[in-house]
Image 1 (spheres, one colour):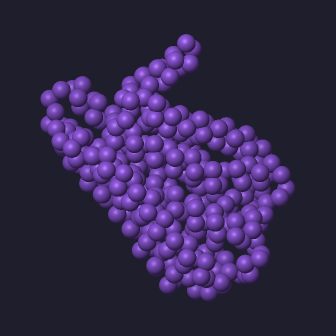
Image 2 (cartoon, one colour; image 1 turned 90 degrees about the vertical axis):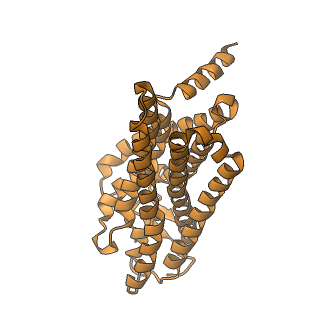
Image 3 (tube, helix red, strand yellow; image 1 turned 180 degrees about the vertical axis):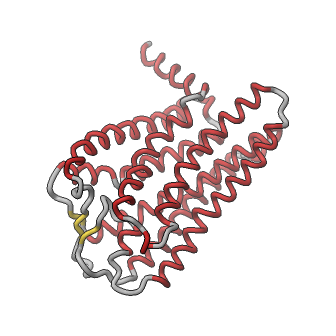
Length: 305
């Protein structure tokens, strides 16, 4: 396949009766994602009480979600609305690289956020000393650099393979497992390399997060105050829920062999982690958070004055 040729994204044209419903729901969810994540970033900047390591990382997570969902959803809305479902080869490569980089960065960032919660609960007396602003900035930078490097490796391996057959992708955006289906040559060697990269970026972070939360749970159980336990479990529980949603859907998509990957199921799983999770993250982290609610009331109250 030459660089001048593009692809046709099949999207959800297999289910034409669903496209109008998906258009409406996707538009609503995307709007909520933009509003929710932008609000978290704005509130964290405006309210001094939210100038803490946890909200510093939460701002990065919100920015990641904004970028990640915007890398795929506007194109999906255009394709659901009109007959043009094409994407250029260059656009497909760019979308693959950007989505992989952002998803990989989020994977590393969630480990950083788990470390922050570990320090807050298990090293409470030394928390501010441990989570120094310079360390927070360094950890955020490592997340971005690590995610970008993983994307460079995987996207580079993918683009090095010749593609043939119909120029159709049975998906709504350029995703790795679907592109591998178009490979002309045996992909076993490349898939092994990609699998190693995916284990590093998905399985290792999951293991680190679970380990940190075992220590957190043990420390919380030692707390005599019921209110203290409830607060600690509430804060950490929201992070664990995000972790479960993110890593569960990512592992389903990227850790199974290409031969067993169902493109029809994959499209709906992709809807979950490109639209639903970025929309839910602001709600999961802030719905029971008194600091964020207080900051929101403060900003709204000022707006009325």
